[in-house]
Image 1 (cartoon, one colour):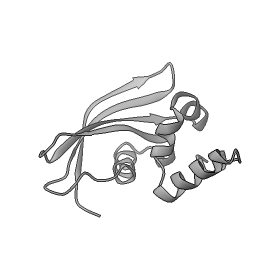
Image 2 (image 1 turned 90 degrees about the vertical axis):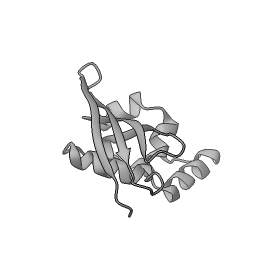
Image 3 (image 1 turned 45 degrees about the vertical axis):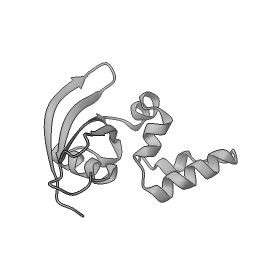
Image 4 (image 1 turned 180 degrees about the vertical axis):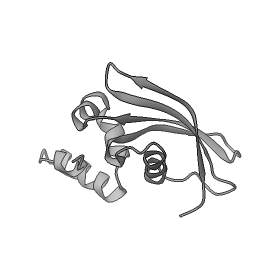
Length: 119
């Protein structure tokens, strides 16, 4: 795993949907952008949050820069997360093997929700 730093730029509570919305900067000193799962793990640790209820919404990279700006939501309950986060964003926050499996099952119209593993 490559070294990278995360700086929280902005943080606000959204009491309406019981989540914390975070804007962050990732600094990755000359390496490529770390993947979502690494960023998610670090933000959850920084905020003492449940990693499974932490969703990385987006990470924007500027060409040639060593830092990226992104946003994340930290939910209090899996029910809120499943209701407010679009399917593709939820899937994007999973490991590659799980993402592939979900898309395959969904295409075959077979159950896949258990793979999100929010418990």
